Length: 290
Image (cartoon, rainbow, N blue to C red):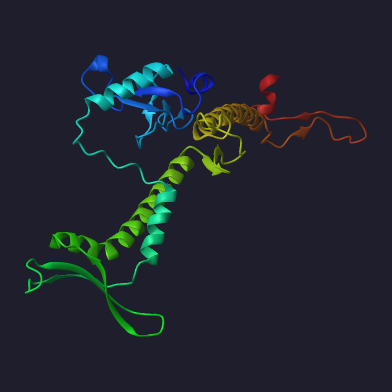
């Protein structure tokens, strides 16, 4: 099934069984009980693919099986019952909204540096206390030190919280850098296929016609190469014809040059009032056809 047929039958959000690795008939692999989250399209290698929820990479349509809603619900319920309750669930993918919330919390928190401080036991407290302190200069220019967190049981918790002041912004910056790099490589991949993004759609970079299922048939590198090959063949044929005509012309010139008179003809009589023929030498080329 190609991408166009798949999109005509199955809209975005269709329940599917997806196999990122191998299909079950080919061996033991992973099955995802999920839904499609994009329309199907052609990959850079020309294979019809689609993206599904819970998976970052695309999956070839040969490894995606649309199923009925009741079959999908039964499979989901079976997966939930088979999972151990103590098994930690994998974190959901970071949405733009959640990323913005994290960035806002990091921006609103007290500036650093933060430090994890362990207070030894004393007469009042039998166990050590673990605090996270922040030292900064406030809006009035005063140096401030405050306790931003109290981790009563473990120093490791205090260390985690203290380092979050620098770790969270660093991770957000790294995420932005990785996304920018991904976009650059994506743009290079699109350019390699003579495509670009306009209003969220993939279009031909030359004519801006939508090309959701692959490169433009007119301006793609393959199409341009084929046209260039045809034009080159036509130019070679014209060149060969011109060479043949030139060779024929050169042959005629050589023949004419071979018939040029190189002697000094003599009039048959000296009466210039009467017409007279010129007598050429016996070896003159003019006499060849006589």
